[in-house]
Image (cartoon, rainbow, N blue to C red; front, top):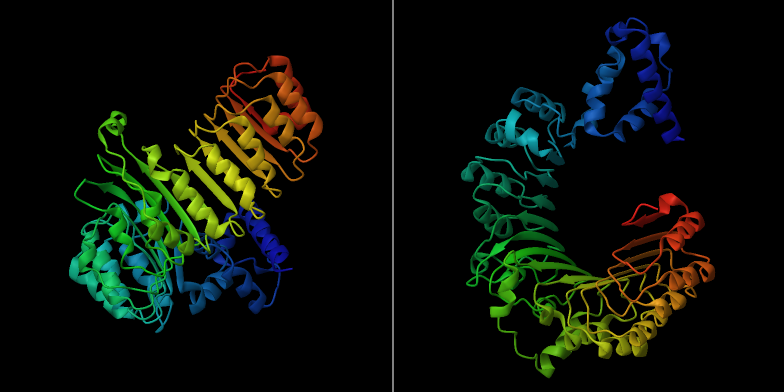
Length: 462
C-alpha cells in the first residue's frame, strides 16, 4: 500500500513539473493528492535523502512538512556522486535533526572531496551533539584534523556501531583510536591503512571487518585480526610481496567466523618462484581450524601461491562446517582428488554456490563425485580446470537444482557434452562459456535458442 502511494506521489510530481514550472511556489495545491500528512510523512521517510531534497521543491506544503519533520533529517545519506552539498547546506541539514542530532552520515566520495569543508562538517556534528550517531562513513574525506576526529569518536563512543574510515589521512591513527574508544562498534571498514596491531585494544563487539591494502614482508595481515576475537564476517584484499598467507592462519584466529573472503595477489607474478612454501600445520592446529570452522557458511579464498590453500587445510575446514557451508570459492588452490573424494564422503547438503579456478590437480572422475555430494547446488563456476569434459556436463544435466553454469578455458569440452547438458537439465537458466574452443558454432546457436540469447554469454558471435 505504502509503495503504491509512494509511486503515485512521485509520478504526480513528475507530471506536474512538466505541466507547470511554477508549482513549486505552492500556487496550485489542488493538483496534489490530499493524503493525510502522516501517510505522506511515512512515504517521505522511505525515500533516499537526495530524493527528499528534490521533493522539497514541489510545493510549499511539502517543503514545510519535510523541513519541520526532525525524523527525516536524522539519516543523511547521499549516494549521488554528482550531488553538491556545501558547508552551509550541511549545517542546515544537521540543525533540522533537532537536539538529538543525526543517526547516520554517509556522503558520496566527491561530495566529501570537493564541495564540503570536512573539518567544519565534523565540528558542526559536535556542536549539535552526536549522542545518537550510529553510522558514520567518512571514506575519502581528505585533510581531516586528527584532534577533531578523535573528539568525535570520544563523543559517540557508546552509540557508534558502523564506521568506514577508508582512504583518509592518518587512517592508522583513526582506526587505532576508534578501536580504543568506541565500546559498541560492530562494523569496521578501512581500506588503505595499516595500524600497528600491538597498539590496539581488544574489542569483542566488532562482528564485521573489511580491509584492503598493501603489506610488506615485515608486516602481517593476520595481526589485524587479533583485536577482534568475535569476528563473524571478515574480508581482506591484500597486495603483497614475498610473503605466504595461508588460509589456516586466518581461521586459527577466528573462532566465530561465518563469512570469510580473502584475496591475496602480487603484481609481480614471477615472485611466487622465490617464495618458500610454508611448512605443514601440526595436528593441534588442524583440530583448532576444524573447531573454529563450525559456523562457517561462506568461504572465498584466492592467493598467488597455490600452497596457501591445499588439501590438508581445506579438509580441516570442511570437517567443521560441512553441514552449514553454503558458498565455497577457491582460486589457485593446490587441492587435488583427495579433497574432492573427501567432499563426497562428508557431503555438503547446504552448498548452493561452488567456484573452482586454476585448480589443475583435480581429475574429472573425482570432480563428478564431489558434485554429486552437493544435492542443492544452484551455481557452478569452473575456470581453468582441465577436468571439465563432456562426462561432467552430462552429470550436471542430472542436477535437480543447477540454475547457473560458468565454464572457462576447457579444451576437453565439446558440443556433444553441451547438448547432453541442455537435453537433460530442466533447471538450467544461465550459461557462460568462454575459451572452450572445441565447442562448435552450431551447438552454441542451439544453446541460445534453448536458453534464450539474453541468458547466454559466449566469446564468439554466433
